[in-house]
Image (cartoon, rainbow, N blue to C red; front, side, top):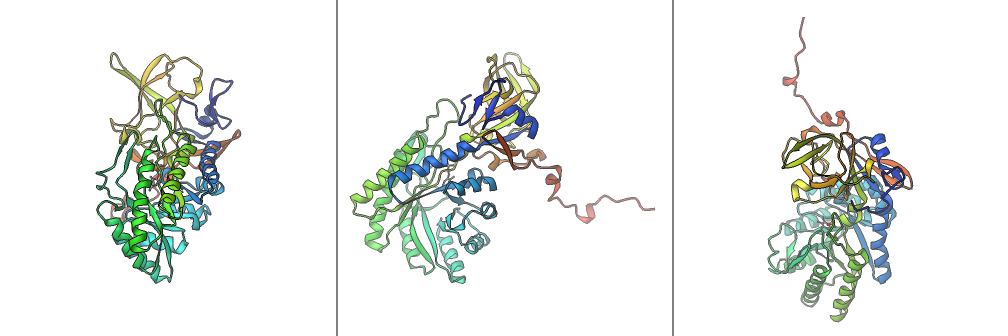
Amino acid sequence: MYLHGTSRINDHGHLEIGGVDAVKLASDFGTPLYVVDEALVRQRCREFVEAFKASGLKFQVAYASKAFCVMAMCRIADEEGMSLDVVSDGELYTALQAGFPPERIHFHGNNKTPQEIEMALDAKIGCFVVDNFVELQLLNALAGERNRKVNILLRITPGVSAHTHEYISTGQQDSKFGFDLGNGAAYRAIEEASKLPNLEILGVHSHIGSQIFEVEGFKMAVEKVIGFATKVRTELNVLFKVVNLGGGFGIRYVEGDSPLPVAQYVNAIVDSINTSFAGHDYPVPEIWIEPGRSIVGDAGTTLYTVGTYKDIPGIRKYVAVDGGMTDNPRPALYESKYEAMLANRATEKQEEVVSVAGKCCESGDMLIWDLELPKVQTGDVLAVACTGAYNYAMASNYNRIRRPAVVFVKDGQADLAVKRESFGDIVGNDVIPERLQKQTAHA
Ligand SMILES: *Cc1c(COP(=O)(O)O)cnc(C)c1O
């Protein structure tokens, strides 16, 4: 298993993260357990921020909180000078409760409800990323009721979609998100928004995909944006002060994943904005980006305890852990691949190939196929790497399994960031209607 960030093998032959022995973490906090390498999260934030600072341009790096949104994480994003993307009232609430400055919060989503918009207006967040015509009118009306003028970006679908290694520059119209550039919807949206009294158009937003390993897609998006920006400037007299290029910067989950260093993505974006805007005699806009996975993904490790196993001679050996699709649905949803190791026997040589199963009543509940490990025994601690993004965030209570705790480790210290759910949490929202209540025997 590739060792990310501060992960290393210590003198006991155990995996250690943030200076804390993973075997001790498992026994102190129980398993499954999400472990977050705080130093690595901060390092990733700084890589983005420093690269932009070096460019001399105005910028905002907004952490896409949907990747992993808990209050402690919002605190780190704030301390590191990041902005924050939210996509629901729950994420907004989390950020506000954590004391995240509202003026640096951006609200995304293709179906913000009136209640969500009102909550965000009342909190005085920095910017709404408007997704469609219905929202334009709704936001204008709700802002008007409050005598407010609110900053907006319009989310455009630029017709560039980045699939890790291939870029498709047409055929991306068919998306539930945003105003399409190709069919004129984006143009009409700017036209309409510029006439709405309570909206201030800051610029446009585009997000081309996720787990992107190259810079070409971002460059193509910039090309589309500058073409649009010049047209809109000439014909509608609207100037974009902000261009938001979204997130999607790739990380290394398994061997063969080859992300670029963060600065390389940022420099490519900065260069192409500089060149294309200057080339059109257009004032260089502020650049905003929205990394999610690349901030928290490789900083997360999930620890499990091995329980049962089953050997089917000539076929495969299943090894079952005490979690599964409830704490990491990505393999089942996307066939995502992960690397893992035995945290308690990190120096032992690999002797067998096993497939790691979860404990849910679902054949598809598999975490890793064909993983090389030392001879696995009940009680071993299995560490799965790179689980920081879209794991806790997507966790469920399927089979009424309690969601794991999250601990942040740093400089030899482990601190709880999310408590393990209790049985009380499991039934906490259940109500037994009067007529279904168990009758107590009457005398
Ligand atoms: C999901 C999303 C992001 C973050 O994507 P990552 O792949 O986690 O970096 C950023 N912006 C928007 C609009 C998104 O939907």
